[in-house]
Image (cartoon, rainbow, N blue to C red):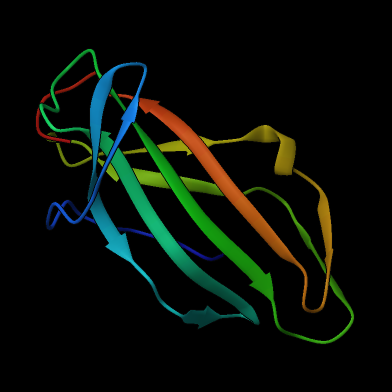
Length: 118
C-alpha cells in the first residue's frame, strides 16, 4: 500500500479560482518511489484564508516505473483529523486503472474543509 501524507508548510505561489485568491499551501516536488510507483509534483492549493467551509485541491503525479503494468485498486489522499483519526479522499474514477510502465496518472481531488485543524 502506498501512503502519501503532507502537512501545510509554506505559502509558495498564488492563483485565482472563481475570483478567490488561491495559494500553494503545501508542495513536494519529489520524486519519491515506493513499490515501483514514482510520486512527483504533490501540491495542495487552497484559499489564502483557509477555514471551515472552504476547499483545497490536491494534485500529484504517479508514474509506474516497474516492468509490464500495474493495476491500481484505488488512489487517494489522507488527512489527519484533530481527534487523531484519519479521513481518506478518493477519486473513484481511478479504481481498477491499469497503467503501463512509463505512463503517468495525474491525480486531483477537491476536499471540503469540514473541521478546524485538519
